[in-house]
Image 1 (cartoon, rainbow, N blue to C red):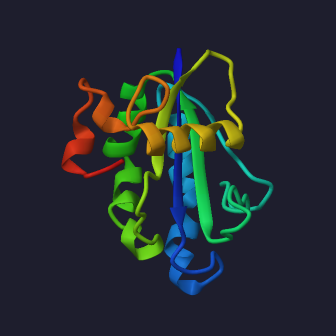
Image 2: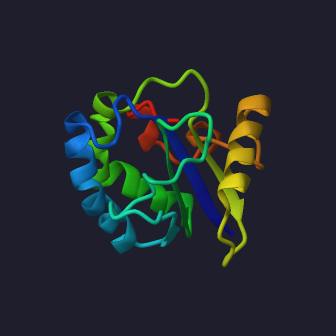
Length: 156
């Protein structure tokens, strides 16, 4: 089994606002790092020219909601990317670009090798986590006793 992850965030400013430039301008670098990491399988990419999925709107009623989704061979490999690469520097600056969320905004779940999850599937997993809490069906970092880097970062 592989692990899929969905991370959503409500932008503080429109994506073309100059205050978002540092985030947008570095998205390609952060995504390229993910693709070079051991264990990386796939990531959601939109049709835009920003090397990400920022042009996708997973919540039609909320145009400021951005999405990131990827698949990894193991949760440990995802953990290494999140906390031990350039990604961490941008995660630490998230308050500059994203509004605080009052609900779950990050979810992981197991997927069969070769399966590419849809946004609808991912949103259903996030909803399941919000409604039922951690389970083998949908979980966050705290459900995984063997990964610990998130604890010092207060993630998911």
